[in-house]
Image (cartoon, rainbow, N blue to C red; front, side, top):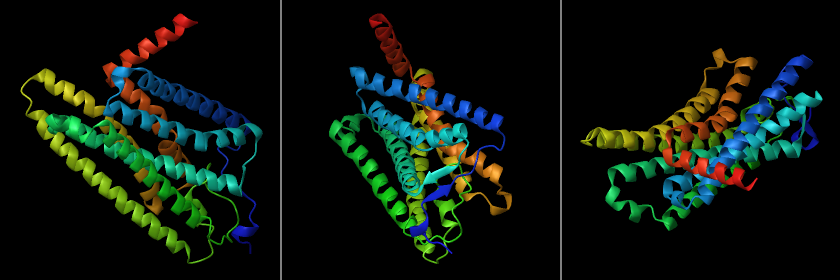
Length: 310
């Protein structure tokens, strides 16, 4: 019998058994992470350098890109290291850090997506009050509240999870440190505290989801009342990317955590974990840049300026 104080490291799930497949997974993760870093880095640079993009929508998009960069950098580098060096160890402190930062960036992304929904709601349903409701100070306060709430949420979950006594070994059935996998190692009923925190987080997340659904019902009702087809198309073009990102984030995360135990398997769990932790950060910038003409123009200007200098 061992407890958490005697555990110095955890064993992560290997992505593949054969050396060839491990190297293939390394190359795939390398390509995805480089594409994610480049795409989100370009969005951050374009918004920061383009003065005409200093609007609430692009301010929140910049914050969203930061969460995408953070979440991809939290899980993928360690998985790449393990695949390349044919190991599956992660130290106790590194595992705790991975849990904290993953919870921080995922929660911040969800809160920011909720705020961005409010931005779209005010822009379309209350355009005359947009400058008042979403001034620069209000936007800064909302972004700060999202990050602070995510930090507190991550701190509570991490502290509670790693205070539990662990006596079921140290092998995690995941390629990164994940709270449900760590709870499986607990030998105490005190894990119910963490389940209570998870239930509280689910209630908070459900409240954000209800707000998003209600806002989009109002948005679509307002858009359908716009007389001109061009006006409707412009309104939809600003909402659809956000709706696509919300749908991708929620569908992958909810199915990964709330799927029936009867259909659970190591390979399915692994595939779902990649879907909710790796795929959204890679696709989010693609979704936004493809639909937003202002952002595409700013990116072209940024790239042309870079190549002129070099």
